[in-house]
Image 1 (tube, rainbow, N blue to C red):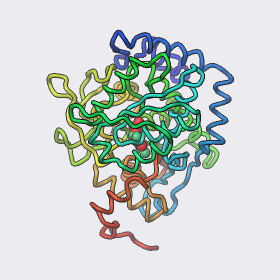
Image 2: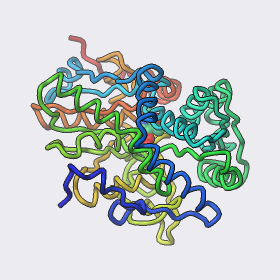
Image 3: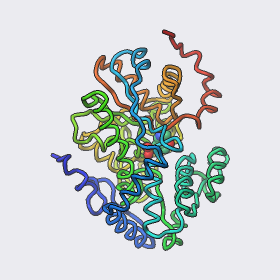
Image 4: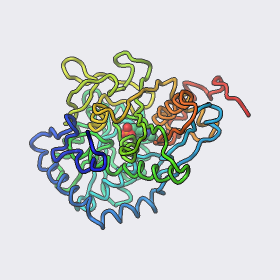
Length: 409
Ligand SMILES: *Cc1c(COP(=O)(O)O)cnc(C)c1O
């Protein structure tokens, strides 16, 4: 049995393992870089100066704490349990990602680095990191596949306005995987002056630990806020799972409570290979990008093609801590399809005046379904980001949602 009062002292262990998952399988040339960042993090994270500075940044720059909001109309029209949202869409730059990017930027500063390096796929991580780099006055190199650069033009523009260098990657399929390789190759050459910043609770140790710790403010705030609002704990807490950072931060606040935790994975067009990215539900143990986890993989260990309407969720693996939480049964991993996510996207927009990111819409979709089954009680869903980035795509493919039949009261 795991004692959740001491959980954060025990997981990950000193080699970066959460049970059988995690670890750090890096090429020998990168080992000194990882050793440096691990040692720096373990000492800096206890520094009163670091903690005070991060708290000030969260308050004054990011606008934290973000509120918890009771969706009274949505709950009434949906029927059943009450739905509450943790409003990470109101975090500066519109999503939870800035929580770990500001932490990583401050870590870079404390380590005396001049530059941060990362890859980006859909561009959300690149924009959040470019924001942090501008704040701290750090150089910022973002590696991005040429195919993604063409598809994600608005995010490329944002990164450039914020002063980042967007470096096109033109080999292979010219998407995220090649961008990861290129970012690591650059890091190998530049680690004396630069730090690599990952976009989720992924990668070799210590990144899953660092990102979880920086995202934990989401769950800690939400727990306190919900308790202050209602006097009790929610029955269910849910969040969408791509790599797993917004959900890890949310769940970390409630691990020791008698609260059901549900991670919502993208089921895309259905359960067929290549039609979804539900790595915990359909994956098997394997190794990707330097760590062990549950993975959607072919028999030869190659990552499978994945798909979701939400580009922030289409990763063939999941953070190692989620694989662990699944194995010990502490978190339940459920799914929502594209259709269910779009339905939730329109409902939250029409009933509450909140346009959610398509990623976050998966968490809302599950909350709606679960609320109807539960009849009473309360569900707290993490609204990881706002949907401005998705509106053009949604109206092109689904119109303005008029055929969804929105009742007026
Ligand atoms: C990137 C992103 C996600 C998925 O990433 P996690 O690491 O699983 O949180 C979810 N929501 C939004 C708004 C995102 O930008």
